[in-house]
Length: 113
Image 1 (cartoon, rainbow, N blue to C red):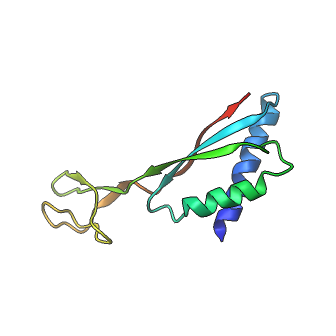
Image 2 (image 1 turned 120 degrees about the vertical axis):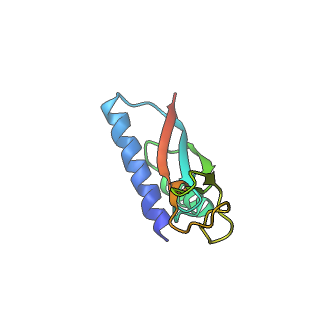
């Protein structure tokens, strides 16, 4: 379960920022997770909740923004949400499309009181 390592890294990153900026109590951490990031949001939330005990983030909650997969077709310049596991352009059939959203795994911000 790589979500445990991700949760622990999120905690380390935020603790580092808290130390750099004088501390405080974290109440909320906001993440952006793409549909094709390879991260299971429910597992990450479980691991986060299990890992924050006795850290500077104890008592905080995780808020996750889910980012759907979006692709761009270089042939016809269309941006689209792909169907199932095919990234082929629904307009022209081009298969060499580029993912523009949906692979994110980002800390957006965190709230401190």
